[in-house]
Image (cartoon, rainbow, N blue to C red; front, side, top):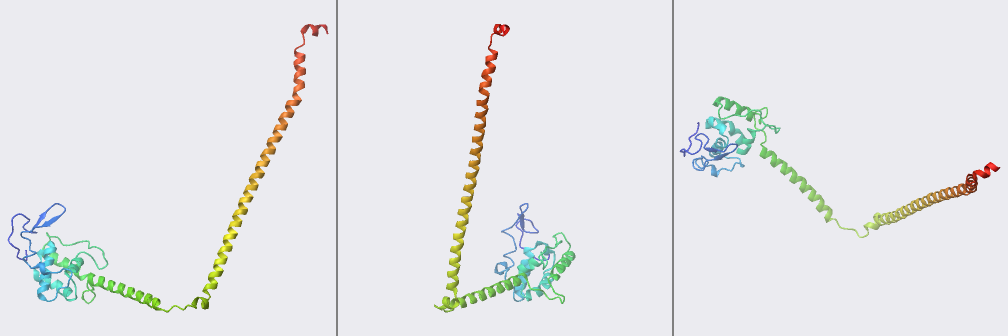
Length: 260
Protein backbone atom coordinates (compact mmCIF):
# COMPACT_ATOMS: atom_id res chain seq x y z
CA UNK A 1 0.00 0.00 0.00
CA UNK A 2 1.01 3.59 -0.51
CA UNK A 3 0.59 4.54 3.14
CA UNK A 4 1.87 3.18 6.42
CA UNK A 5 -0.63 1.27 8.51
CA UNK A 6 -0.56 0.58 12.24
CA UNK A 7 0.60 -2.76 13.51
CA UNK A 8 -1.77 -5.49 12.39
CA UNK A 9 -3.63 -7.20 15.21
CA UNK A 10 -3.87 -10.50 13.33
CA UNK A 11 -7.64 -10.90 13.78
CA UNK A 12 -8.99 -8.78 10.91
CA UNK A 13 -8.11 -8.57 7.23
CA UNK A 14 -4.53 -7.37 6.92
CA UNK A 15 -5.26 -5.20 3.88
CA UNK A 16 -8.55 -3.53 4.76
CA UNK A 17 -8.31 -3.79 8.59
CA UNK A 18 -11.97 -4.82 8.63
CA UNK A 19 -13.98 -7.89 9.55
CA UNK A 20 -15.81 -9.53 6.65
CA UNK A 21 -19.39 -10.27 7.74
CA UNK A 22 -20.73 -11.43 4.39
CA UNK A 23 -22.73 -8.56 2.91
CA UNK A 24 -21.38 -6.15 5.55
CA UNK A 25 -17.99 -5.11 6.86
CA UNK A 26 -17.02 -3.90 10.31
CA UNK A 27 -13.92 -1.88 11.15
CA UNK A 28 -11.40 -3.48 13.44
CA UNK A 29 -11.37 -1.52 16.73
CA UNK A 30 -7.77 -2.52 17.51
CA UNK A 31 -5.80 -1.62 14.40
CA UNK A 32 -7.91 0.62 12.18
CA UNK A 33 -6.02 3.76 11.09
CA UNK A 34 -8.76 6.19 12.13
CA UNK A 35 -7.00 7.24 15.33
CA UNK A 36 -3.49 6.74 13.94
CA UNK A 37 -3.88 9.49 11.36
CA UNK A 38 -5.77 11.94 13.55
CA UNK A 39 -9.15 11.48 11.84
CA UNK A 40 -10.94 12.17 15.08
CA UNK A 41 -10.20 15.89 14.59
CA UNK A 42 -11.63 15.95 11.04
CA UNK A 43 -15.20 16.93 10.30
CA UNK A 44 -16.04 15.36 6.90
CA UNK A 45 -18.83 17.88 6.38
CA UNK A 46 -16.47 20.87 6.67
CA UNK A 47 -14.10 22.10 3.97
CA UNK A 48 -10.46 21.67 5.05
CA UNK A 49 -8.42 24.87 5.25
CA UNK A 50 -4.68 24.76 4.84
CA UNK A 51 -2.22 22.09 3.82
CA UNK A 52 -2.34 20.13 7.08
CA UNK A 53 -6.13 19.80 7.09
CA UNK A 54 -6.15 18.85 3.42
CA UNK A 55 -3.63 16.09 4.10
CA UNK A 56 -5.80 14.78 6.93
CA UNK A 57 -8.85 14.96 4.66
CA UNK A 58 -6.96 12.99 1.99
CA UNK A 59 -6.08 10.32 4.54
CA UNK A 60 -9.71 10.21 5.58
CA UNK A 61 -10.68 9.59 1.94
CA UNK A 62 -8.11 6.79 1.68
CA UNK A 63 -9.48 5.21 4.82
CA UNK A 64 -13.15 5.50 3.81
CA UNK A 65 -12.63 4.44 0.16
CA UNK A 66 -10.55 1.28 0.19
CA UNK A 67 -10.17 1.32 -3.59
CA UNK A 68 -8.10 4.53 -3.35
CA UNK A 69 -5.37 2.95 -1.22
CA UNK A 70 -3.43 1.89 -4.30
CA UNK A 71 -2.80 5.56 -5.13
CA UNK A 72 0.05 7.50 -3.56
CA UNK A 73 -1.05 10.10 -1.06
CA UNK A 74 0.66 12.86 -3.05
CA UNK A 75 -1.26 11.90 -6.20
CA UNK A 76 -4.63 11.88 -4.46
CA UNK A 77 -3.93 15.16 -2.69
CA UNK A 78 -2.88 16.76 -5.99
CA UNK A 79 -6.19 15.67 -7.56
CA UNK A 80 -8.33 16.93 -4.70
CA UNK A 81 -6.51 20.09 -3.61
CA UNK A 82 -8.28 22.24 -6.24
CA UNK A 83 -11.65 21.03 -4.97
CA UNK A 84 -10.73 21.66 -1.34
CA UNK A 85 -9.56 25.17 -2.26
CA UNK A 86 -13.01 25.86 -3.77
CA UNK A 87 -14.80 24.89 -0.57
CA UNK A 88 -15.45 21.21 -1.20
CA UNK A 89 -15.73 18.90 1.80
CA UNK A 90 -14.46 15.29 2.03
CA UNK A 91 -18.05 14.10 1.83
CA UNK A 92 -18.45 16.06 -1.41
CA UNK A 93 -15.42 14.23 -2.84
CA UNK A 94 -16.98 10.90 -1.89
CA UNK A 95 -20.21 11.96 -3.62
CA UNK A 96 -18.28 13.08 -6.71
CA UNK A 97 -16.59 9.67 -6.92
CA UNK A 98 -19.98 7.93 -6.89
CA UNK A 99 -22.30 10.15 -8.94
CA UNK A 100 -22.33 12.48 -11.94
CA UNK A 101 -23.41 16.12 -11.52
CA UNK A 102 -26.85 15.16 -12.89
CA UNK A 103 -27.29 12.62 -10.07
CA UNK A 104 -26.76 9.46 -12.12
CA UNK A 105 -24.39 6.83 -10.75
CA UNK A 106 -21.14 6.03 -12.54
CA UNK A 107 -21.24 2.85 -14.56
CA UNK A 108 -17.71 1.90 -13.54
CA UNK A 109 -15.87 2.61 -10.29
CA UNK A 110 -12.35 1.62 -9.24
CA UNK A 111 -11.81 -1.64 -7.40
CA UNK A 112 -9.19 -2.76 -4.90
CA UNK A 113 -7.82 -5.21 -7.48
CA UNK A 114 -7.26 -2.52 -10.13
CA UNK A 115 -3.68 -1.40 -10.83
CA UNK A 116 -2.68 2.09 -9.62
CA UNK A 117 -2.65 3.54 -13.15
CA UNK A 118 -6.23 2.41 -13.84
CA UNK A 119 -7.40 3.78 -10.50
CA UNK A 120 -5.65 7.09 -11.19
CA UNK A 121 -7.39 7.44 -14.57
CA UNK A 122 -10.76 6.52 -13.11
CA UNK A 123 -10.43 9.10 -10.34
CA UNK A 124 -9.30 11.71 -12.86
CA UNK A 125 -12.30 11.02 -15.13
CA UNK A 126 -14.81 11.09 -12.27
CA UNK A 127 -13.47 14.32 -10.79
CA UNK A 128 -13.20 15.92 -14.25
CA UNK A 129 -16.95 15.53 -14.72
CA UNK A 130 -17.38 17.97 -11.83
CA UNK A 131 -15.28 20.66 -13.55
CA UNK A 132 -16.25 23.26 -16.12
CA UNK A 133 -14.64 23.75 -19.53
CA UNK A 134 -11.79 25.70 -17.97
CA UNK A 135 -11.03 22.95 -15.46
CA UNK A 136 -12.41 24.86 -12.48
CA UNK A 137 -14.46 22.77 -10.02
CA UNK A 138 -18.20 23.31 -10.09
CA UNK A 139 -20.27 24.04 -7.02
CA UNK A 140 -20.15 21.11 -4.62
CA UNK A 141 -23.28 19.23 -3.50
CA UNK A 142 -22.98 20.90 -0.10
CA UNK A 143 -22.76 24.34 -1.71
CA UNK A 144 -25.74 23.59 -3.95
CA UNK A 145 -27.78 22.47 -0.95
CA UNK A 146 -26.76 25.60 0.96
CA UNK A 147 -27.80 27.77 -2.02
CA UNK A 148 -31.18 26.05 -2.15
CA UNK A 149 -31.65 26.61 1.57
CA UNK A 150 -30.75 30.29 1.22
CA UNK A 151 -33.20 30.66 -1.65
CA UNK A 152 -35.93 28.95 0.34
CA UNK A 153 -35.26 31.12 3.38
CA UNK A 154 -35.36 34.26 1.25
CA UNK A 155 -38.75 33.27 -0.17
CA UNK A 156 -40.05 32.48 3.29
CA UNK A 157 -38.74 35.79 4.60
CA UNK A 158 -40.43 37.65 1.74
CA UNK A 159 -43.71 35.86 2.46
CA UNK A 160 -43.45 36.67 6.16
CA UNK A 161 -42.75 40.32 5.34
CA UNK A 162 -45.84 40.55 3.14
CA UNK A 163 -48.01 38.89 5.79
CA UNK A 164 -46.60 41.16 8.49
CA UNK A 165 -47.35 44.20 6.34
CA UNK A 166 -50.92 43.02 5.87
CA UNK A 167 -51.34 42.40 9.59
CA UNK A 168 -49.93 45.84 10.39
CA UNK A 169 -52.54 47.65 8.32
CA UNK A 170 -55.11 49.60 10.33
CA UNK A 171 -58.68 48.41 10.06
CA UNK A 172 -61.18 51.05 8.93
CA UNK A 173 -64.41 50.62 10.93
CA UNK A 174 -66.41 52.14 8.07
CA UNK A 175 -64.61 50.15 5.42
CA UNK A 176 -67.41 47.63 5.04
CA UNK A 177 -69.93 50.40 4.43
CA UNK A 178 -67.69 52.27 2.02
CA UNK A 179 -66.79 49.20 0.02
CA UNK A 180 -70.36 47.90 -0.04
CA UNK A 181 -69.36 44.61 1.50
CA UNK A 182 -72.28 44.60 3.90
CA UNK A 183 -74.75 45.23 1.08
CA UNK A 184 -73.22 42.45 -0.96
CA UNK A 185 -73.39 40.12 2.04
CA UNK A 186 -77.04 41.04 2.67
CA UNK A 187 -77.98 40.37 -0.95
CA UNK A 188 -76.07 37.11 -0.91
CA UNK A 189 -77.89 35.99 2.25
CA UNK A 190 -81.28 36.91 0.77
CA UNK A 191 -80.44 35.12 -2.46
CA UNK A 192 -79.36 32.02 -0.55
CA UNK A 193 -82.60 32.08 1.44
CA UNK A 194 -84.65 32.42 -1.74
CA UNK A 195 -82.77 29.57 -3.40
CA UNK A 196 -83.34 27.38 -0.35
CA UNK A 197 -87.07 28.16 -0.40
CA UNK A 198 -87.31 27.44 -4.12
CA UNK A 199 -85.51 24.15 -3.62
CA UNK A 200 -87.93 23.10 -0.91
CA UNK A 201 -90.89 24.05 -3.13
CA UNK A 202 -89.51 22.01 -6.02
CA UNK A 203 -88.96 19.06 -3.72
CA UNK A 204 -92.50 19.32 -2.32
CA UNK A 205 -93.99 19.57 -5.82
CA UNK A 206 -92.03 16.54 -6.95
CA UNK A 207 -93.23 14.53 -3.94
CA UNK A 208 -96.87 15.56 -4.54
CA UNK A 209 -96.65 14.62 -8.22
CA UNK A 210 -95.15 11.25 -7.36
CA UNK A 211 -97.89 10.62 -4.77
CA UNK A 212 -100.64 11.59 -7.24
CA UNK A 213 -99.18 9.30 -9.88
CA UNK A 214 -99.03 6.45 -7.40
CA UNK A 215 -102.67 7.01 -6.38
CA UNK A 216 -103.77 7.11 -10.03
CA UNK A 217 -101.96 3.86 -10.70
CA UNK A 218 -103.59 2.23 -7.70
CA UNK A 219 -107.02 3.49 -8.87
CA UNK A 220 -106.46 1.94 -12.30
CA UNK A 221 -105.51 -1.35 -10.71
CA UNK A 222 -108.64 -1.34 -8.52
CA UNK A 223 -110.88 -0.59 -11.52
CA UNK A 224 -109.32 -3.41 -13.49
CA UNK A 225 -109.86 -5.81 -10.60
CA UNK A 226 -113.53 -4.77 -10.32
CA UNK A 227 -114.08 -5.33 -14.05
CA UNK A 228 -112.55 -8.76 -13.78
CA UNK A 229 -114.82 -9.62 -10.83
CA UNK A 230 -117.95 -8.47 -12.72
CA UNK A 231 -117.00 -10.49 -15.77
CA UNK A 232 -116.40 -13.58 -13.66
CA UNK A 233 -119.76 -13.32 -11.84
CA UNK A 234 -121.62 -12.75 -15.14
CA UNK A 235 -120.17 -15.90 -16.68
CA UNK A 236 -121.12 -17.98 -13.66
CA UNK A 237 -124.71 -16.60 -13.56
CA UNK A 238 -125.31 -17.20 -17.26
CA UNK A 239 -124.00 -20.77 -17.20
CA UNK A 240 -126.04 -21.88 -14.12
CA UNK A 241 -129.58 -22.69 -15.73
CA UNK A 242 -128.06 -24.34 -18.78
CA UNK A 243 -126.09 -26.72 -16.65
CA UNK A 244 -129.24 -27.60 -14.64
CA UNK A 245 -131.27 -28.34 -17.86
CA UNK A 246 -128.50 -30.53 -19.19
CA UNK A 247 -128.33 -32.38 -15.89
CA UNK A 248 -132.18 -32.97 -16.02
CA UNK A 249 -131.97 -34.48 -19.49
CA UNK A 250 -129.19 -36.75 -18.42
CA UNK A 251 -131.21 -37.89 -15.38
CA UNK A 252 -134.45 -38.95 -17.41
CA UNK A 253 -135.15 -42.69 -17.15
CA UNK A 254 -134.54 -44.77 -20.28
CA UNK A 255 -138.10 -46.27 -20.08
CA UNK A 256 -139.66 -42.85 -20.33
CA UNK A 257 -137.52 -42.10 -23.34
CA UNK A 258 -138.71 -45.40 -24.95
CA UNK A 259 -142.39 -44.62 -24.19
CA UNK A 260 -142.00 -41.32 -25.79
